[in-house]
Image (cartoon, rainbow, N blue to C red; front, side, top):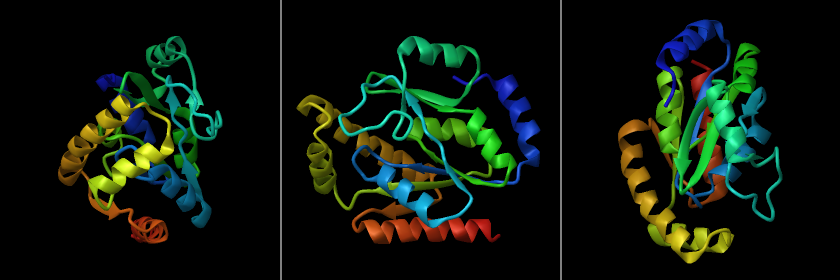
Length: 203
């Protein structure tokens, strides 16, 4: 859990920030990582936060690009030093968002994109109350199952758990997220997210 007293102080210190926070969430396998990377390519002055995690690195993943892969001991040290904006345990592994880079990016006017799960999004929203929240939906549960299986990163049991969790996340998202984007066609989904962010930045 976050330290409420210090989070309040951090938020007050950050009131002079120039940039905006965009939270992008979605169930595993929905394509949110790909969408986030495409958004960064198409918009200027955007910083995509890289999360830290204790889960094993996938064969095609790159440390410092997809995630920062660290040990559980290192992760807990970061919690103890209040270096994480939010953190959560997902399927037995820890995930968190480093604070320092986000603060730096906001102070120079960048739009900060946080690709985090629903648990983390609630924590981040409590700090950045004006954060925009976008949830990426699959076109159907069948398509999501196919995408998860095609990744080949999880065993059958874990993949099944991810599908069960997806239903819970989607139900929560309808209550907490301002924008819902269906990723049936990647190009269309990216364009929709870009338009949402551009409209917000022009306000």
